[in-house]
Length: 328
Ligand code: 13P
Ligand code: SF4
Image 1 (cartoon, protein in one colour):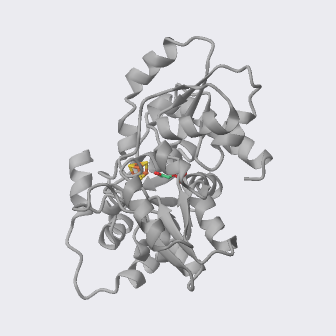
Image 2: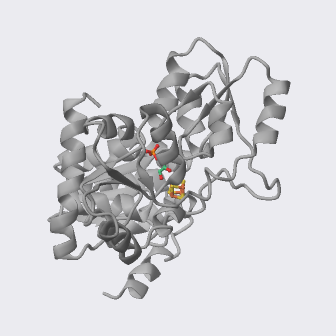
Image 3: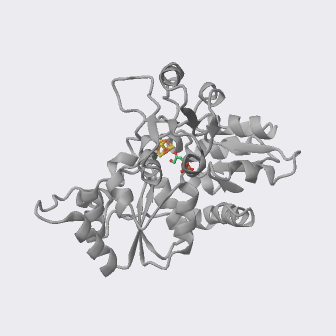
């Protein structure tokens, strides 16, 4: 089936009188499917998923599932990572157009050329990359394990880090390394307004600013805590503070609020007050209707070229092995 036909099935009208959660549950059982969702999905999708997690957790769950079908409620590179790890399983994403501006900022041929221009360097890539970029990578990282994986290499190791310049700069600053960075960024995390965050801090002086390391340096500098999506969530659960200004995609506030119903979470505002730029447009393409269609038709499916898969699985496995050793 062509990609166009496959995309067509995503938008088949869903009968108005069906109970979507019930039907999704029925199909998931009938087909031995597992639903994995990222924290940036809408609340209804997070609530129905078998597992909700950050990029590292999604890869870890995909690697160990016994389900026949993996439905990855996230973006394309997350589906690709699951498919690379489980080439014999059917991996579906509710909307095949759910891309990632960060992965798009690093075209594989250009990155391969960049790697060629820096012989003798270890290549560390963020998981937010295409399978073809992972295929020219030595070890993949996520924001949860990037620091520890970089530090697992001797200090004199020459490293190329891509594609997120903000995460790369942050890791350089906390490890004292001098990694060569690819110049990529995420359109959501780059949009936060320092001015508006400081205004909020003035309004809520007791609130802590908590920030994802894909944000720009000035935001990181005024933050009380910097961490991956899962680390931010854990921080809000364990902290004795009751108010947080959250500088990452606002979807994670759903789980933060569920875990700490009495605490106040304020989504950090973007520069442009006319848009909801603290929501990832790609992540939000997935809907309950598309999730239902995806389970019903078993489409759209993620495919990865066999040669690329064989190369890309090595740096992902390396990441999972190091993470396991580190207890992450
Ligand atoms: P984590 O899931 O590693 O926190 O990454 C955030 C992100 O932007 C995912 O696309
Ligand atoms: Fe990509 Fe940014 Fe969306 Fe994450 S939030 S999927 S990095 S565009």
